[in-house]
Image (cartoon, rainbow, N blue to C red):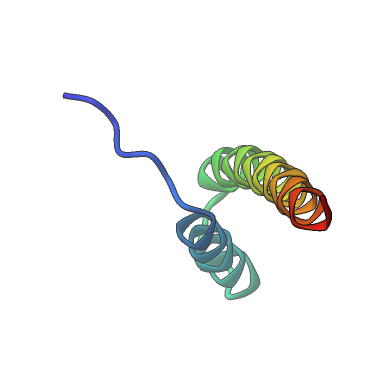
Amino acid sequence: MAAKKMSYKEAVEEIDEILEKIENEELDVDELSEKVKRVSVLIKFCKEKLHTTQTEVENILKEMEE
């Protein structure tokens, strides 16, 4: 079974959910470490997605100018 490709919106929502749990002290120490690692992965994904989108938009705008 292939994993569903995550969207930027889904990644941000998951980050928000994890941060809310951290702020409300709903995680024990073991979960905290695991969730911080997950947030790190999600942030990296979001940064890459933003960079890719920015590049695509810049290319489209350049093509429109030609």
